[in-house]
Each structure stands twice: as structure tokens, then as C-alpha cells.
Image 1 (cartoon, rainbow, N blue to C red):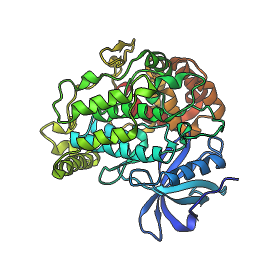
Image 2 (cartoon, one colour):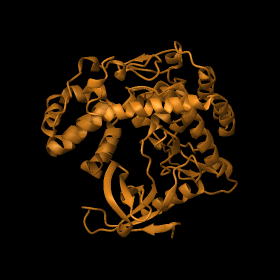
Image 3 (cartoon, rainbow, N blue to C red):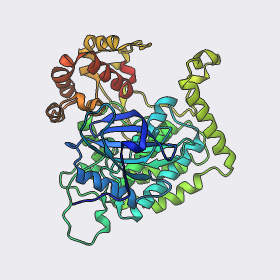
Image 4 (cartoon, rainbow, N blue to C red):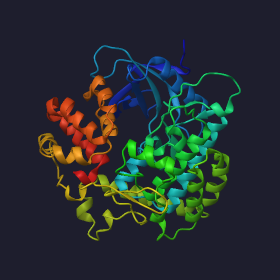
Length: 441
């Protein structure tokens, strides 16, 4: 039977619990360790989704990959969650990253961070992935939400739920699971083949797409569902590099060259992370003050974002502008191909609604009133369902996941969950929708 290393902590060690995230995998809490005097994160996985054996595997992968650029595990949690009844829960206790993730940073900034910070994030992720591969591990789910940020916006890799011992580093005849992990927008073309067995080149491709996302300040292919990505990526389509054509930044040309080499169609042509580190190290600002100024600029912006008086105090209008200004891909087209865009039939430009301080009743009314529009335009259906967590029954999740198109998925979600879910469920759907499709609300 698998065992967990490190010490086990219970409720006697933790206080001031706060739910900070949830999804189909389970829940993440922030808690204060009474003896240590600082906050930790506690990740609780649904037993039905991730049994104890898988929890052990994730914990062991974190221990093997422990370094400055990978999230640190402090130990194991075992106890009864606050307001969670009397059942014993198992979880992983790890570092709490104050600034969320690259994904949450993109949303708060409404665009990319300053270039010195872009280059540092690119380098730190490469360092973490290089160490991971040196330990014969793969990540298999490298994306903005799994690159976490501490108080000084330094990056650490997280979520090893999909990590596996690298098949390219083994000489044994051990059978592989055949599972294809990761978010589909970050999966390489070969991963869409049913018989694909992941190797390290999988992570390198994901890193290339991640670099584009960090530099552009947005997700790739904003309106593309799984079926469209599965069709177009093997044909050679990639995120548009021309969004950077009007940008002048020292090192940007080298960064674009690296990302395009990483997302090469042939796994054999993609560089190793050791080679990536050699490139990203040269992109770091020559003057330390440049990165200090960039971090300070972003942190000030984040403080303004949460300040109730920030909009009034900013009379210049600069608060809503991105910190750097590459041409942003619009959400009314799918940005595929290095030199092309594939147009969609989306009509979401006409679907902009006021969202000022809506309560749950208002959100539920919006979801009810705009059923047809949402079925037509929502593409990130499964990502939204992941955020709804237990609000979507497991059987319903499987039924929706089996649908071929995003419209069919949305129609099933309305019929099976939203129609009878009440205000709380509809409000949660609205909040998730605002996160994934802000222009629809």
C-alpha cells in the first residue's frame, strides 16, 4: 500500500480556515499553522476523483521534485474539515502562494505584466521544469493556472496530479496508463492520437504555449472547444505570434523564437528544458532594478484593483490599460495559425451586459434570461463545470463530458443542473462564466 512521507497534521495544528478554490478535483483551503505562525494551503481531493493511492502518488512526486521553483509540500493533512461533518478527510499540506497564479494575474491585470517580469517568469518555469525532468518526472498539465506566484511574484510549479515517471527516461517494460493529461489547449498534436504515450516533449510543447500566454496576457484560442483544437493543432495551427509585431522589447525576438521551437510539430525538434534555460537566462534583465521596478509596478496595480476607491483616485484613465501593449487577440475570433485566424460564427459582441454589484438573484435571472445566447456562445463548458464542483452530480458530469459539441454540453448543463439548481447554483455558474467568458456578461 502506498504511504505518504513527512509528518501528518490534524485540526489541532491548524486554524483560521478559508476556502480559496474548488473544482472537480476537490477543494483548496488556506489555514494558519498555529505553531509556525504562517499560512499554509491544504488540498483536499475528492475520493471518487482521486483515491488515496493517487493522492500518495501526487505527494511523492512533489517530494521528488522539491526545489526553489516547485511548490513545497509540508506534509499530509488528516482530519475533519470545518463545517464538513464528521468524516475524516485526507489531503496535502503545502506552501500557500499569496498572489495566486499566472492565470489569476492575467485576469487582474487585464493583460500581460511588464516585460522584465515576463522574462523572469519564463526563466523560473523553465528552471522548475528542467529540475522536474532531471528527476525523471513529467508534469503533463503545464498551464497558467498551475504556475503559482508568491508575494514577490516569483513562480513555482504546482499540481502534479497528472505527473508520471517519464517514459522516455525508463528502460523497463513497465506498462503505462495511456492517460493523456493536461488542458487540451496546451496539448501537443501527437497527444490527440488514441495510442499516444506521454514523453518529455509533451511538457516542452506545453511550455511553448504557456510562453505565448504569459507574453500575450491571455489564453490561446479563446473561442475554440476541444473538437476544434483536436482538428486544427495536428494540422499545424498555433497561437498568433503576430500579436507581438508592434512591440519593441529587448529579448522578445528570442522569446518568440523559443516558443515556436518548443511548439514544433515534431517532438524530436523541440529543445530540452536545459536548452530552454540557456535561452531564458539570457533574457533576464541585466539591471536588477528593472525587475524590482516591474514587480513594484504590478503589486501597486494589484493593490489598486482590490481598493474600493481605486477607480475614483485614478483620474488619468491609465488604471484600465495593460502594463504592456501587444495587440490583443479578440474574443470574436479563434486565433489559430502563425499567420492566420479562423473566424467563428460567434455573436458575443452583441452580448455585453452590465455586471455592477449583482446579487445572487440578479445572477440567476441573467442565467435564466440568456439561456439561448449562452448555449450558442459558451465554449469553456467543462472548465466551468470543474469550478462548480459538487454542484454538478458525477453522473451528470459524465453525461455532459460525452457530448460532442460545446452547445450540446451547455444544453445538457441547463437541463440537468441549472434549471433545477436554484439561485446559488446559477450564481456560481455566473461567477465561473465571468471568469472564462467575461465578454458574455
